[in-house]
Length: 141
Image 1 (spheres, rainbow, N blue to C red):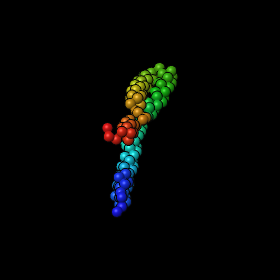
Image 2 (cartoon, rainbow, N blue to C red):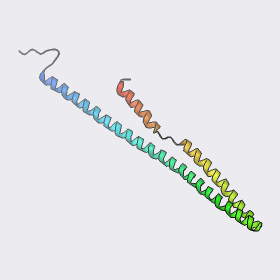
Image 3 (tube, rainbow, N blue to C red):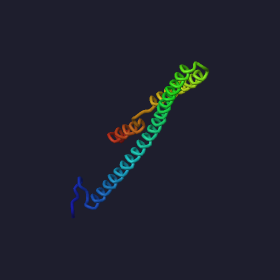
């Protein structure tokens, strides 16, 4: 008659427990891999969204730069025409230049507001990673 140690159990029972532990570890590892893949995808999506917003704001700055160029062009044209003839043609060019100045100022303000709204850090991903780390430390809470 074989004696079974209460601490060790029988050989077959021990193998079954080892298999169960291995299956649990395998499931946990698979779940963690899936979780990290999902977090990476979330981070990619957030970065894409922020890059898109930054691109739009940069476009507004580009528009402001072009409008500034047009201001200089039409102011120069107005100065030339105004000094050369002192007739209505120069004043017309001055009005066009003023309109370009207004457009440039509006584009600049809109671009600056858009850049202030851009966040370089993927906020949701950082938050969920903190939650995941906290859960990993205390999975029963």
